[in-house]
Length: 172
Image 1: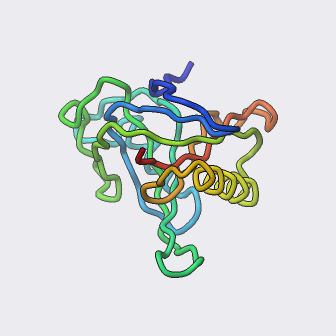
Image 2: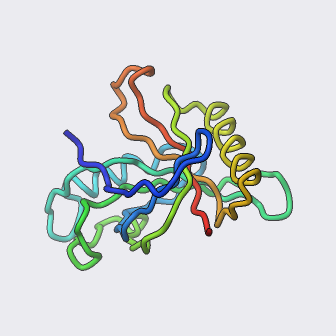
C-alpha cells in the first residue's frame, strides 16, 4: 500500500476542508502540459539517482500549472511532483541523474481542499478549482499562489474508486 503524506484537519466550510501539512520534500519535473514528467519521476524513485537507491512511492502525485497573473490564460508551464516519504529531509534524498528532476523542500503550510472522484479530466479539475476559489471568496479566506491537483491512485484504479483533490495554499 502506498504511504500518504500526513496532515491535520484544521476546519471545514461547505465541501472545502482545511488542512495543515508538515514540511515535505518533493521531486519535481516541469513539463509542457501533459503527464510526461511521470516517467522521469518514476525512473528517479526506482533508482535513476546517484546512489541507485529505490525510494518508496508516496501519494499524492501533485500536478500544478502556472496561471498568468493578468489574464485568464493558462500557460504551457506545468509541473508534476512526487512527494518523498514522510520524515525524509532534503539531505536524505539522493541526487537525480536527470537534471530535469529537481528536489525541493516545501515548508509546512495550510491548504484548502475539495475532493472528487474520477479520472481527473481537465473539465472536472477546472470545475473543482472554480468551486474552491468561489468557496474561499465567500468565506473571506485569502488563497496563496495557484491551485494544484493531488491524485492518490495508481493508473489502473477504476474511476469511481479514484481519489482526487484540488487544493490551494491559504492564509488565515
